[in-house]
Image 1 (cartoon, rainbow, N blue to C red):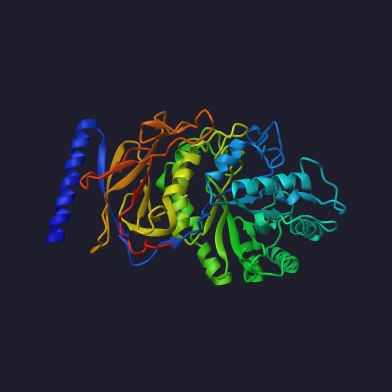
Image 2 (cartoon, rainbow, N blue to C red; image 1 turned 45 degrees about the vertical axis):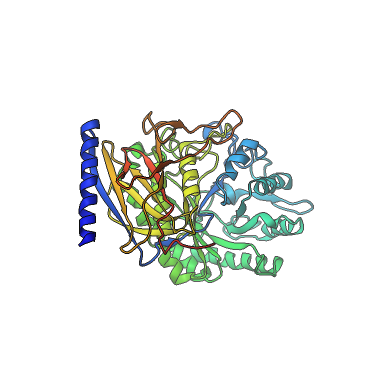
Length: 504
């Protein structure tokens, strides 16, 4: 009886609050009650769940977004780049991409096929600079090896150059920065050469597994075997997994839900049905893993809003954050342990601007996600199609069972007034809570993001981050208001949710 009165009172308070706002602002409102399913977790994610990539694209006047942004030309010694990358740790750095299957490793006193310096030759001086960057930032590398390397018949991998490279890494004690090795990049597509059948890639993975086991006999310190780095195409996926699923440590694949050249992309990124493509594409992969590679972590090893380098003024603007916050949420409840964002620098979908390393809007979204969200995803009930909403255990409040919510309001005119309902019998509280509202007063295509409508998120004169201070709420009658076209992160430090309580 008391619970019924409490619910009625809460709804009445929320309704009154919405009416006052509507009269004051002339904005439509919808009331949302979100419930946490405390019977089980939605998923477990790695501390490195939010990771990022480098790619190999060379300087090319026809694609200015990659000038000085590909791995051969990016300034890895830049203090700003290192500082901003470090703020996103813990994270993995994946090095790969289409041109990874053209790279030759130029090892001293070793023979290899001809290559072009600064374009297809990775000399060990440049590799040493990559190692220095990884150590300075505090990331471990998932490195994509060239499966198209061949001295004879095209489509037949010659592992000699890869073995020389791995031996060099081991002998020079650089394996401290290595998480694992991939082999081949999207070889189920005909981009840099003929399509490789899944069974052929599986055979090559057995060869690479043998090399790793030989060079690193101790399984505890051996780099992981990661693959197949494909797009979701059949029969490639099943053929590969039947042949090599049992020997991989990480099952990884790539996802882009649109094309950079799509003129309708700006509209699609704000459509709930279009964003649901992430869920549709991601959903089958835990089935693949459970059937063929149950021992493996599941990664989304390369992902961005649109392939072919994204779309300028769209995927490097505030609008892209709605796809981003949604896909991070989808992966977390569909058993994906890591997502690697394409890319840290380069193209029109990067977290940082090429050359300047000035944060793009998605950098701030990623940074807030990394600071607020812990390693456990929760299952939420309730909501509306155009209100993106996901729940997690809060990163900063494990001892008190803290909860974190993330929101994205796709609606251009409607406020969502949200109340979180803790499980029945909970001793926790929804206050105090801390709210972080990201908005773009200049509109969806703005590059400038504001925190809590007061502070523009820009680096200071020394290149340092601004203070990311949330708005504290202590009044239990004050609901969360997710305004039109905003991204919101909320921490509930004292939720006392048993799924989130840990002393770790």
